[in-house]
Image 1 (cartoon, rainbow, N blue to C red):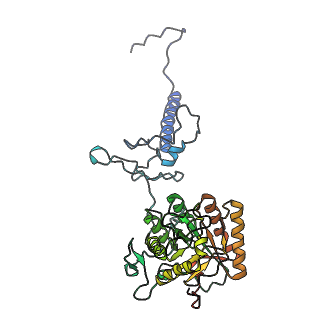
Image 2 (image 1 turned 120 degrees about the vertical axis):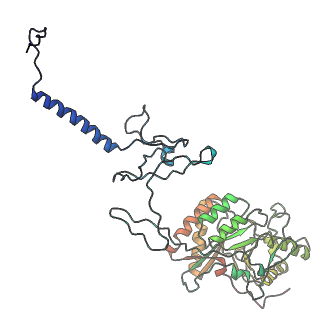
Image 3 (image 1 turned 135 degrees about the vertical axis):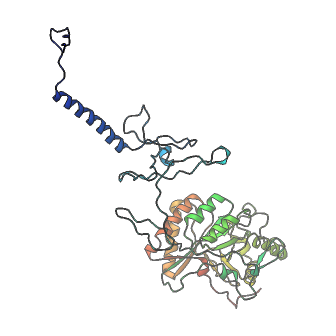
Length: 417
């Protein structure tokens, strides 16, 4: 066999690679392929984005961002760009489950593809906890709803009036002040504190905040001038909060302090005042009674006329309603089931004085066994102070109760002038 000619260059002939060199070459190649496959296994499949959703790979920093840069807040809040877990593939134990992404409808009504995510199984109905698998936390079930809703007005306890339905005692003897009252534990011997919050309905946002933030044992007084309050009233009833209608009575300083064009006044006839009272009582339904105040105006001049105030109380009594007198120091209502306020907690309406008045209200309750407070105007400061105070009241040995738990029987021997 002929020899291959020797390669020129460097003055030496070419030699085939040795077996040892070939062995190490293939070892390097196999390690390279094996390492790449392992890296892909760790990183997982590429992220599949939902077309048309505008999602971005929030988990991967932008090209100009340093490694370890935080995910933008708006993307973290929406969960966009979370890596998907393919159906049938086990998720990595250290991976955080991606939030669900709703399917976005495409043009023509068809739903577009979305991220495939692993969602927790829904909790089983009923109070029993769902058994958790090894290494997983038991699901947190919602707390039981302890709030007892107050029913809407019953047709059998309404009658037609000139301005709308008026409350009345039912044919079976049931009264609005009992049917629409929040139940209270009469056997509780702790000092009882009641609170009426007025000035509601005119500012929907503040009224809604009061309903959400305050305990359901707070009684709410709505202005008869408020409109479109049906939803707010239903929310309050749903939380079990008692309702009052605020009566616009002539206050001190009238006419500079004006309770509106439907106010009950000392200078008009009894018949006209009766008509205006019917108007106020027909503004909404499902309340336990009335308070003789419209916000911070507490009807002092009207109430100073005993015959006018007595006639108002008698009308409420005939309709099965209670009456709250907002004047501290006034006598207990004589011609209607009711109570008199001991402290006006937001006069003046600053933080320090509100806290002082609430402390005084507690002191009266400890001394006498019960006390009733009134706040005339819902404000952010007032709601903050009331929520903080009410949240810690029981830790100081007292209990907050609805106003219906504090009313007294009318004096049957009262002067009927």
